Length: 154
Image (cartoon, rainbow, N blue to C red; front, top):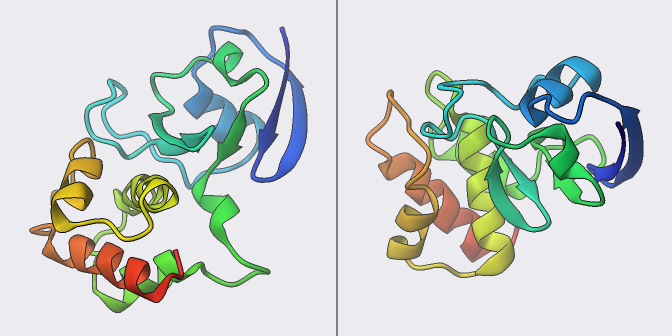
């Protein structure tokens, strides 16, 4: 199946099995390893990407569902080769302990900040409720999102 979509700002086309998981398409076909597989069941959020402005679990998305969509991955957040403000905020706040959940946490946070530029703590917690971090108590992650929002640098 020929699939056409925008990936990190660039129009892409690929001839793929329509039922292939989009997580595998990103990692195997496009060489973007930042989107991680955790559970493979949409429970942990490690594979979170942004599709048409919304946080989506790439492990639950089929390749055919990317057709015509605007997809953003962690690799697409850099700004002229530099980390985005949100990524820097995660580092500054120690919100990247082992780092495995970090891309998904950042993408879920980015989707929130795109929709709600100055979220409350409750909104942040709700937006991150589909992402699991086994290393932290989440306080550093919430602080990172709040810092990025306050700086308008998400």
